[in-house]
Length: 88
Image (cartoon, rainbow, N blue to C red; front, side, top):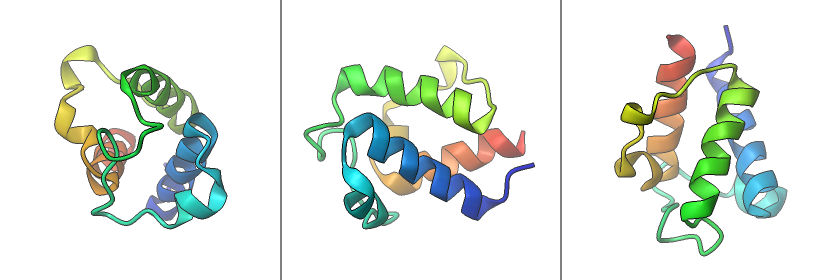
């Protein structure tokens, strides 16, 4: 099983790669950092790519009915969702 710090690091790397944020901006994300609607790079097209990459990098499956807008409101929400999926 993946440790929480590993999930955090993987998620930050994923956002840096997919959104082109760069390591510094990704590292600066806090639990309260806004994502969708806050980061211009995080648009509706990016959501699908982020979900696919989360599945690949974290070894999880995300069902369509699990995807809710609030997951993408903040980095903390996305991290919590990722951790819950990895935990099974």
